[in-house]
Figure 1: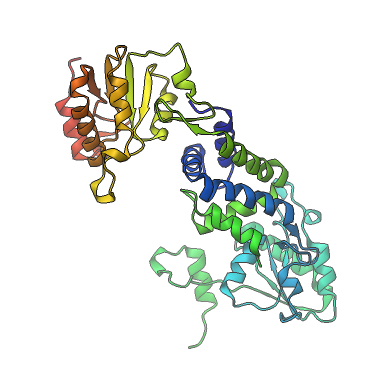
Figure 2: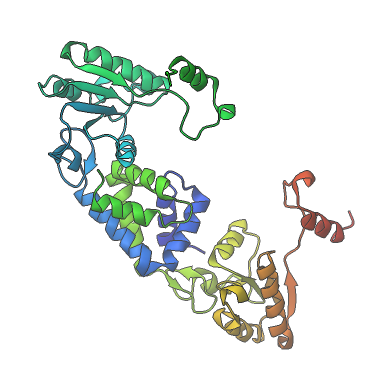
Length: 197
Length: 197
């Protein structure tokens, strides 16, 4: 049956989020069948990325350069910093192409149960950035979870003396969402934040 | 935002079965965070597997040796050959540890619509193996799909002159299955193949 090299590949693939042991087996067979078109290129891409990707010293984004492309872009607005939990959130916001300021990646959320305290997050550097003359507004874009909101509160407290305006993402009905399927919390938030038309 | 090396990694990961663009992004961030424990080992495992894995010249299984471990194992029963569609099916049967004969991987199913004819499958070599003195029984373990069953019929015809006994996997209720959730075809097959208790 499958021997060491295949087993090892399956074991490693099974550690990826979204792949279990069964789909890792399927993926490994898929790869073996496409040795030249997918398997070898993927091995090279992994190695290249492992070598070249570094965290940005300013915002915490991941990129092949430090500072990252967002921080290095002179056309972006220095007066607004959007605070996100993870790099994935930064990428999600970038895909919308609707934000042209800078970012700050916290690297997680406060979570006493998991032993994550303020000193584990990239907060001190945010306070430093917010203290700069240029920065006028900090947008808190942490998740609408208990931990995300707790983190947002904590960050707000820490930024109190910086003299910047602090805002947070709006709560409401997701675009394309049907009322029927929404949870009560979202519906009451949308009702509370209703706007004049 | 993400640049070439990351984009390329995401694109390649998204080609794996079970991963779409969104989960490929998640997987790539997961990998970048676990550079030494997962990313580099995965790159090496892919490269090692790409180099070492070969199809078995006898049965069509994939392994690091040719003949594969199953074909090379002297303790296995030479008198029974189990015919499967794909290597994944062989692995699935091996996991049950309930079959101790040899295998033969067809490499697919007959599918006129997709242009897959008998010459595209590993059938000639099966006929050759079935013609050997040692072989007494061929178990057809193709899928219970239209294409799988068509292929089983075709293989049966081709083996008619070999003088071997030909059998097929039983149809019936899956172990743990509830009648209520089963399709009509499976239920009638199970009824037809009922056995005395």
